[in-house]
Image 1 (tube, rainbow, N blue to C red):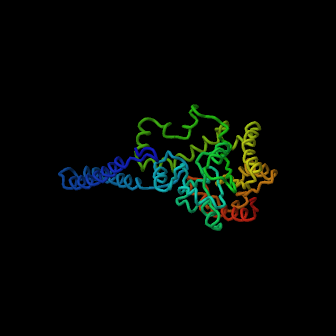
Image 2 (tube, one colour):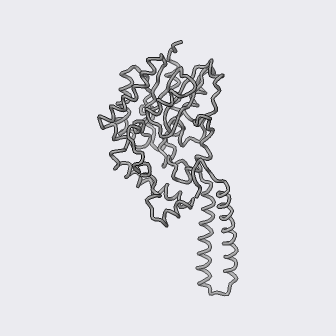
Image 3 (cartoon, helix red, strand yellow):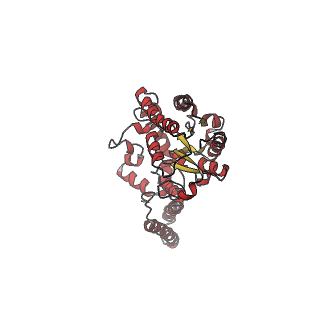
Length: 353
């Protein structure tokens, strides 16, 4: 098996590739031997068919070893390939960003963009295509945009990372998604973290085959898994982040966490801008009502500028605003649109010196 996405074992990958090539060569030799063998014609046909199918499988297997596709999950092998290929650079703080030059930042206007996978750019091959990097390219040279995106991050975690960052912000951009509330549910040790690992739910033989075959693994996660995951997600009322917004106690706790950003902004005279993302898939309208509208209202009541992504992308076909059919993260087009609106918002702010 390929192993953890961040602990890739090149030796075993090379060994698998070598064995695949050897198997393909042996299949060709075996086909030749069958053809010249004295067995009956019917037996030859079946043997040739069997060898041909094996050859096709191994060629496909070797090919899919190099397929990179974002699945918004670390379980599929193709997603692990994508992570190894595109999730870079990683700086010393663990962020998907270039190393920080503290000295160069001293005389700059530092914009700290904090958020989760939408900010980190899950599914975006090149970091230059993320809205933070695009914003940095649009702004004058006296601005520096820092990306503090961390996959799976929620509000209180994002706030902590903002305070721990070695560069003090002149402007804070907080990216809020439908899952930003989820940190208030503590599932550690409950088994909830393995709920979406469908491989663990397979039988021993099926698990072994799907876990160790790039071809079968790709088909499993691309074709079969989406339907099962959708049912699990919708049925998980207690832990589904969307439904947490409908629970008064959970929602109020989330508002308390969001207020920390507002207080930090007000107490330190640091402009705060909030980017509110709905779901990028066909659930965009539902999440607008449940998530986007109340979050937008919360910040606007506190005089915080809000970039409402729903208004910017609602007329775009769902397939044209997501990374791919298996990854509902915003694609490059959405990042472009968000960056442009952020640029307009930031350039209208009068900084307090």
